Length: 305
Image (cartoon, helix red, strand yellow):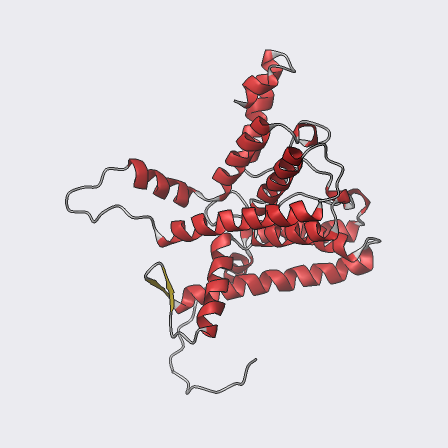
């Protein structure tokens, strides 16, 4: 589809090359573009926005979700099997993703209300595309990120921090992790003994992992921001944006990347590595095998909150 679209502007061979390159770049949430201004020249193109957006979402939701959805709609259930149902993981992903994209698009739209875009359609397309590219950690842009106002930058920071879904090609703490975190908080406030999602009990270990991942990510980002605040000559918002973009392996920038010091670049490179592999996975690899405690200690009480 992309190749056919670009055949109007470029020779056939080049159009096919552009189509293949941008399709792979979108599905793998790489965000690399062969155009000097990324995809800004096509901010008003429904074809580019829709096709690239679908590919970004397809790559970010994870292969588990893609296979589960495929099996649900096209798989044949055997006689002895229970009726086909989506996994709890799939349901959580499919609920979190539209919530994040719609909320993000709305906030970015509000932020860029006074932006001199030609029409209402352009504003809707641009806001939605930026929300998708931030939440899927792809990194394409149809808007100059350096000109985005504070509300828009803060929204994109939050979306990049949450990121894509497990088993996909994106980064971030993942949608399911954040979804479990919010659900756990609601469960605690509601004074419930267990976390129940879609009529299924979620284990305490899974909840602990979600809290650990989100906390480690926040601590890492805070440490990076403190270091870059010393080494770089940039505003606080620009530093936070750059750091979260690195952790989520997004690739978006407000424009300060070329001016970063050697120390700043090294810090961000390490952050990108940790963000891609996963802070918990790195922690497990350093910690080694889990040792079973031979005794059980009495419970201790600590006041919190």
